[in-house]
Image 1 (spheres, rainbow, N blue to C red):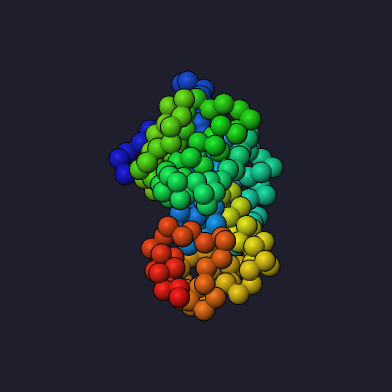
Image 2 (tube, rainbow, N blue to C red):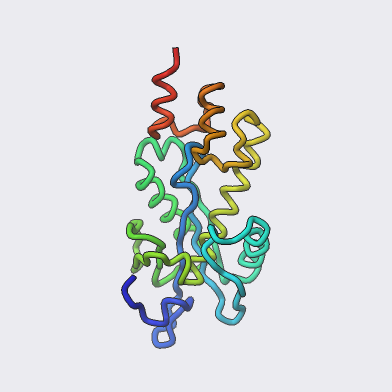
Length: 206
């Protein structure tokens, strides 16, 4: 990743005092459910210890940090793009749509947005991509945690409705357990039928 100025790690820079939001997503790869994005503007007067890429944190630690971010950030928002929107726009387009919704739902309007990865949503404010930002920019780390916890909770909730698929365990990813359940029971209304494994499962139906 190219070198970045130190103010990338702050909610606003010392020279411009601009509010900066971090944005990240969860759920691009799974075979079921919505894709989720979060936007967070941290408060430099109330730093949060332990922010990191959500993927390297335990589920318990993510839950702890989720509640701390909700309580101490200047503002934050979580948004989704639905199964229908994933089918219409493809997963990248739906991800960018969810990111835009999260930023637009913030109580405070940021002057700058930092997004994990290489692609950017269409926004009316300056927007910069930061490859690996979920591990290096605290506001993006916070967004990754909110998005991950939100989607994991969705998976745990729908597991009660569709227990044969094991959503609470694999969170919708194409694990051997999940693929075996699809082969045995067929897909349900929550599956992303445009994804290759689901198309193969559908093609195999009698």
